[in-house]
Length: 185
Ligand SMILES: NC(=O)c1ccc[n+]([C@@H]2O[C@H](COP(=O)([O-])OP(=O)(O)OC[C@H]3O[C@@H](n4cnc5c(N)ncnc54)[C@H](OP(=O)(O)O)[C@@H]3O)[C@@H](O)[C@H]2O)c1
Image (cartoon, rainbow, N blue to C red):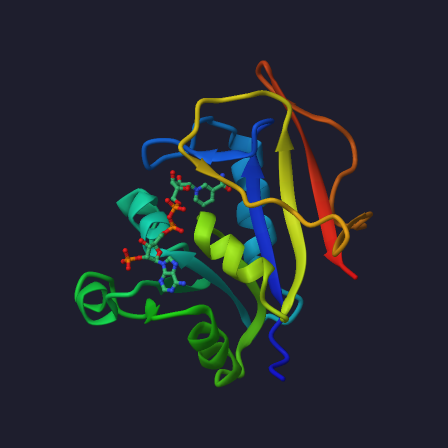
């Protein structure tokens, strides 16, 4: 089996919403900074992390921020040839999660792999045998959403403490949230 471990990272509100009309329903600068740090930081300076995302999530990233910098960007689509023509050089386009894992396996410079959404990609990653942890920011407020984080099977995934992840409640404006980590047993 591949050694690639999939870490999911998402922010969800009380009703498990993650997106609305192709964007994030909230603006949380510190939460975004957490996402950037977690998905970018490496212990070996000669390595990078990979981020795997669905084609719609790719489309949702503002042009000036994509590809997500200092990370290997991998986009999943069922229309590989078409999407390949639209992405900048260096962005990898694959037809599925197994192909993404195979690609990463073939590279020696990838340290960690982060699945960054959206909904179906999270679902596929959670069901995948290589899924390790879910880094979920739990926002203590409800927003109108049209895209949702899939149900976490609590028989399989248990809440754990991670040294690198702050435990305490985070507050930005009138929104509070917690950084949680679930680990597959
Ligand atoms: N809060 C968060 O943490 C977070 C994170 C990420 C995204 N979001 C939000 O979520 C929304 C976007 O997510 P989404 O769920 O609508 O879309 P998505 O998962 O990003 O992308 C869906 C697309 O991915 C491709 N795809 C899906 N399953 C596939 C599979 N098994 N194999 C190959 N390709 C596959 C298809 O692309 P083709 O149509 O090209 O074939 C599909 O249309 C936005 O609102 C975004 O802002 C929020």
